[in-house]
Image (tube, rainbow, N blue to C red; front, side, top):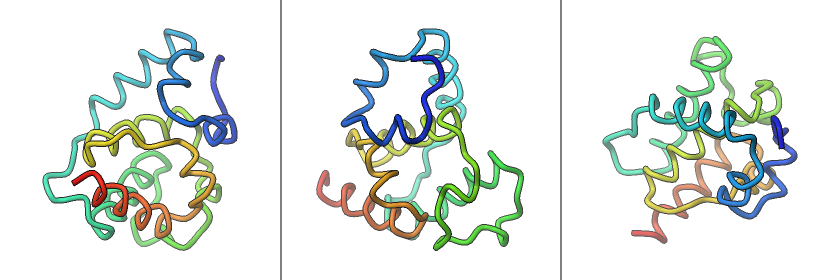
Length: 125
């Protein structure tokens, strides 16, 4: 798989599936980007995850933080899979649990995604 769409990501049960199908150069590029994202030091609460997601979107699309609506559909920010995958991988490390890319399909706003990820973090604790 060359460059998966967000819809492609949403169909996968886990990142391992994606890693097997991705072009090795693209996978290496994604992993290099992910290494540059700092894991927050605070516990992965809903608010902390929400703030992290906003900060990542701001960095990727060049908007001001006040222009990000946490109740807006994520597709409004025109993120590509190469933007989203490193963020997912960083959240995996932060909460200590592999999360499914399908969460992006099921929880389509920053607020709902942060709520669900906080639940995942709490379960893994």
